[in-house]
View 1 (tube, one colour):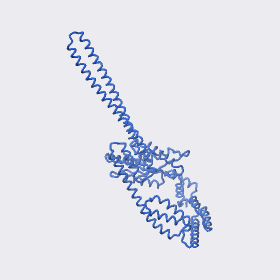
View 2 (cartoon, helix red, strand yellow):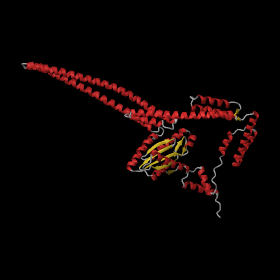
View 3 (tube, one colour):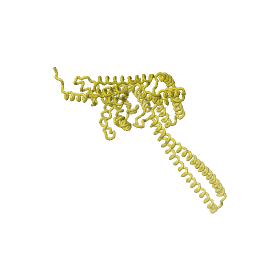
View 4 (tube, helix red, strand yellow):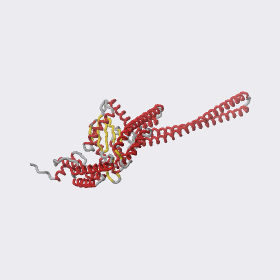
Length: 506
């Protein structure tokens, strides 16, 4: 018969097991390995601090409940589930006994006072979401709140009023949902119509695409705020471009007027020159001596020199006008390039500079078309940061945002130029990997995990190890991008279940 292992030997074997199986050295993973090696049942640890928090919010209403709270505290200290259940049952029973005593004393089936006040507050908070157009629901809600505010609230009339309020609330909620969907449809139609009317303006098309993406369900205030900020930036650049275009038009009109004036002056000079030459020719024909020709030739030379000088001045003036036209055109081109650049931001996530959902859809459509045309493989990975909520709760949302930027930067450093990074939502990212088989895609994500481990993230003065779980799917020949992402998402979920910081194929 084998001798039982010493706890220190079991501890060493558990640590080796974690290392050889690439499991995160968390307390839960270590406990599971230790129990497996020691042939012990892998029971979850006793949640002492969670039960203490629950104990802190329980308030005794009589002596029996106070006694039950003491027994609850003692059971938690002993880590005794049986003692805890018995003490909790005694606490609930003592509370029901107190309520029945109150009911008997007042002759009514009354609700507890704290429940009535909290329920009345709940109705007050929920009512604005149902709208104020329906006077009936406002009236019934007022009646219920008035009943709940009474010192002793009889259950029977409250039940009847709540039944009526529930029916009205269901109708109002359905109507609000229909109104919201109808408004979104109208907004989509208006935006699409604007886009159809302005297909030649690429910068405007970018704004239209961004707007359509921002009003797609589910709506979030943060998403709308980001879209508003980007559109205001585009509108500011658009305003400057429009103002400069108006100025350029005025300058063009002025230059054209000057050009026409110069042509008129040149035409008049030509007419005058032609008249002087004809007169001089007649006079030369009538001259009899060389002395008579001398002043006539002087007039011809003088007229010719004046004409040449005026022609040179007109040529220089036209050259100046041409240069001004070139400069103005270059300035307008630069302004429109700024608009195109600002409009392109409508396809990017402003925090991480990765593509947003709209940009991902366009990139996915492009890559899948290329995959089918060239008959080459395409793999898609969906990765999700591990324990992101805990990071936000511990260090704040700013630290969480910086962690997202950190992951995006490390990912871009590891990606090939042909790969595409997009923020799928929250702490989820998608990587498109063309010309990549499933096995190679899994290896690429595992390599990214190793690089991310080396790139330590600092939250203030504390070093934080950022990890992610990922699922990879190779797109089938006739499969849509949405279905491939769904398979990658399922694989990512399995990676989370297997212990996180893993990559699995789907």
